[in-house]
Length: 157
Image 1 (cartoon, rainbow, N blue to C red):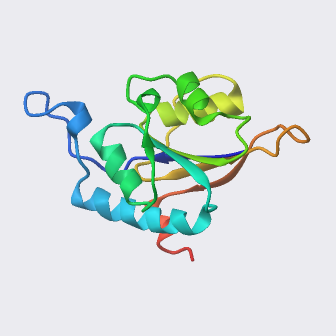
Image 2 (image 1 turned 90 degrees about the vertical axis):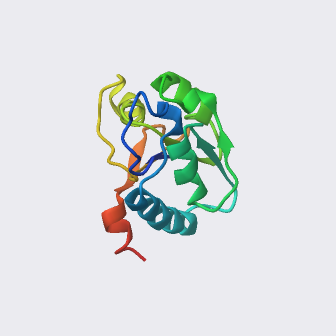
């Protein structure tokens, strides 16, 4: 299985009396970064993969930048747990590639849970991709296939 953790791009600051956290949208910079990473990621992904997004507006907008069909999943929202996210993605038994568009610190906690066995606050930068793979039963140890952010993606072909 391949699991791609994609943190949403830069969003508007949260202002409690103006709007709810779920409604925060991407900034112009965030939209550019999501577009850049989405275009690059689309070229890397297999034709048949599952794309899951938190229902928060900033995650939906980031997922839309990929230009593929995706499903919003409540288990990826800000009040979730790393375990629920892994269950939603089907890690490690899913036979397909899964992209999860979500939030910090949850995505970092998912990565640390996979590699260290405990949910720690590993940092994944805004609009960045943390690509994890497992070869399955023959070699079950997960490995980092790629970790890349919007600043590097523009330089990759």
